[in-house]
Image (tube, rainbow, N blue to C red; front, side):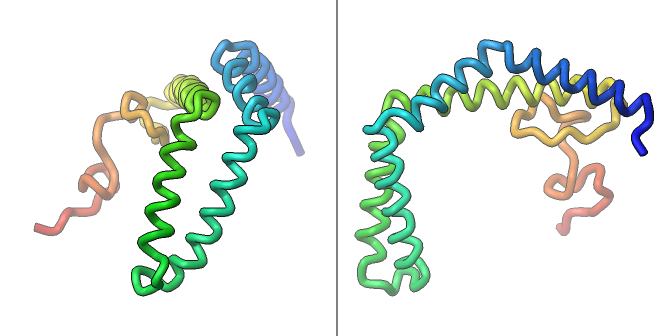
Length: 147
């Protein structure tokens, strides 16, 4: 059963969601997301890349021993560069990154409001609480790195 406090929190989350949807970052992201779907040239590039990727995955099952492995890998890498240089795709990725940064910052502030010791998972190191930690650094997880 949902308590009144939980309903209040859910209402506040809905209000926060509406605020995010009013931001420039969100609107910019939506604009370029729609362009990805509506621009025939971009949609064609994406479809072509997906087909090339499927073909490469089939070849990749056999690894470097497949006779077409190097050729297919080179072709897909070259096409990926072409895809990445498309202005709409470049702007979409930029908008996606900016929106993700905004969401990371919001999550950080909400988490810190709960506790200063909450682990915030983010690709942005600015939002890591307490500096480096975890298994990869032998930090707060308690494990020790082998010497």
